[in-house]
Image 1 (cartoon, rainbow, N blue to C red):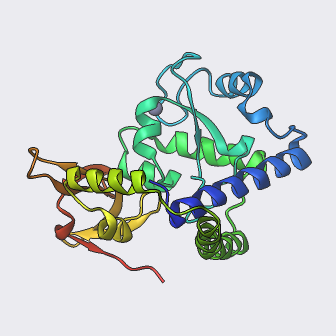
Image 2: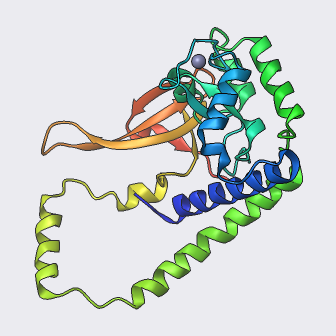
Image 3: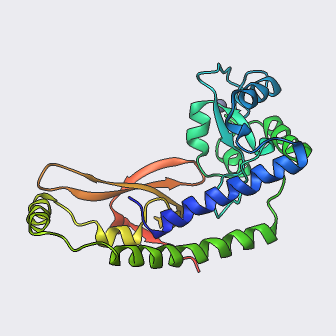
Length: 248
Ligand SMILES: [Zn+2]
């Protein structure tokens, strides 16, 4: 489900990609777009001796996934650049999600050793990818804040250009609404998909990563998947049990 927040997130990600690629071009001489190529995958695998940068599991070309060490979102401002990419196994990539390297290492000490963390950090410095600065954070924050209302405004302008629904469409609409068991409108306002919503469950902080309808047909109810940060454990709960942390 796209909304202005997820659209603003996509735009932020695109901007972080463009900035990172340009920086790699200027500093390392890498052509934009080259990071997706086979050569870079091969080079990363060689650098890390065909193993996951976090846990050291052996990787093949098919099991290897590329992970951004600093996540590419407005909270972490990771850039799409060579020094921010590492080869990762699927389990590490999945459980790291949008955690920083430090958070991931702290929550998975059995998986990420101090030596792996130090190696990844040192490598980022050598490749000029240690660019998580306060000015960049503020810049991205302002960009994101500007994008959300702009997208909303443009969406409204575009909708005004479209013709109204025909009689046939109106009938279909009524039929669809009759079938649907739950109206997600209010729910989506609280937990917009694609955006990072921080919340508390029993006083413990984490983030809402997903929601879904669950239960028997006719009695379905919305549930929220909550990622409890210190352990990285995913917990499914009724949204009523969560206390959303409002961010300014
Ligand atoms: Zn791994």
